[in-house]
Length: 327
Ligand code: NCD
Image (cartoon, rainbow, N blue to C red; front, top):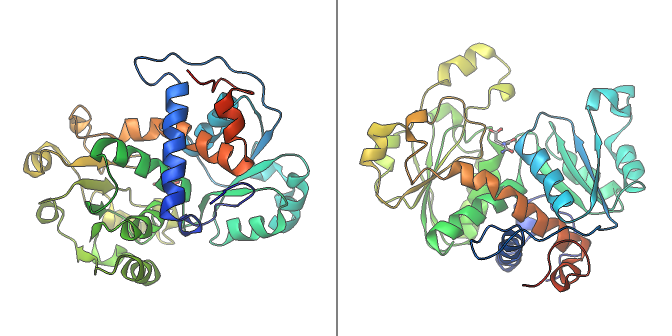
């Protein structure tokens, strides 16, 4: 199940075993980063590889955690600072951009507003391409980050009961997460306003992969019962053609102290962030609210993914370069 040289466009490009490999490798990266009390951060040694980030949409966590991950591995990063400043603004196709950028780097991370853009890029590029979000379609590395956090807290990924809440129609994170959870044998409950339900094609994938029919509701308080994980998402304002339509759903779900009192004691709350108003600030200190820790995991997870796609995990483990020296 070598991941070397492969692309990651959809979460279903990787099997359950390959997800486990990424998460296990991410645990090693976390150790090398000094996450465990018993270990200190290892010093960096240079890695002669370049990661290129092509972000045609806003990003804070994804882009910075990818860049941080490559730098932590000892590699270098080149970035298209702003899509408006690139040749896309002159009409260059994504395929041509992919061919050109492939000549300048060893691996590409791309975010673009159109569904299918990552696939188009991957087909034209001669180096591995990682989808960091293609419109409202998918965001597979967020799912790996989510699963890393979930496994750390629950000790397993299998057979959990997961509630996915918010804008399931336009939220790409849940379009990657739901099929992954289904394939892991989790029970899934979709919680959204009727107009923002999970797209049919994602529901069909979930049914096919998980066998079980996902439950569907718009009632967040009632859905909390028995959950191992609640995954909150923001209403995706930028995907609404009509701003008045967005206004209708703004604030439709707010997870607050009152709801957390009703929630199971061992239910963790995840959120891909950014948060708008769907999680009240008052619950940030609740030990079940793990979204900031979840975001922090983006670095070791992306270090693991980059190292696996570049085929340098053994090198990193033997300490041939970078700080990832065996203790
Ligand atoms: C998400 C995204 O870009 O889809 N953000 C992220 O990468 N952590 C979620 C969002 O924007 O709501």
